[in-house]
Amino acid sequence: MTCLLHGLSRLNRMLERLLHLVLLALLLSFIALIIYQIVSRNLPLLPRLYWTEEFSRFAFQWMIMLGTAVGVLHADHFVLEAFPRGSRADRMTRWIRDLACLAIGVIFVVHGKDFALSGLRRSATASGLSMVYVYSAFTVCGGFIVLFSTQRLLHALLHGMPRMEAALDTPNEVEEALETGDHHDVSLGELAPTHPVDKRTTP
Image (cartoon, rainbow, N blue to C red):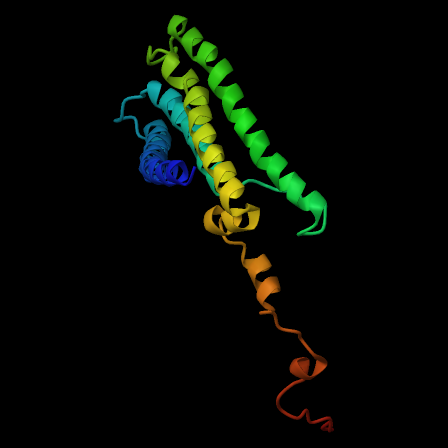
């Protein structure tokens, strides 16, 4: 199991770096296409390329799905803590959280495959691009979520949930400050002016 976790961690680390590069390329493409649309509306010299609107929308959709997968690896999504931290109910909900992410990833892979194949019969209006390249985002996202969730669950199973979260979760500055006691209590003395106030009034 330890060797499996080590190999999966190395694989996911490489996939995460690849996803960062892909997301950066998608973001730059999205910004460039939006800027061109704005400029072409105001400069008659530039041709109106209607496919830029479609491609910017497709890039945005892929950014959402791939960013969602990276967020699963580091637990960057919104989490509602309904129970005291460290309690049995809190530990149980943390396990349920990662198991639910794994289940969602499996659903995306299984049902997203049929959704992606339906794109073979459809094409984008302006560019003529086959919609399979757009619809397959759910399947690809589900595959990454399955890999990332499996790593989290396997790490928690072998080393415990707290050590897994410390190794994979994005650091929370507020929680770290509360745990280390690195907070400043503001007293009335600190709010008082450093220089004496002259209360005398002038005529």
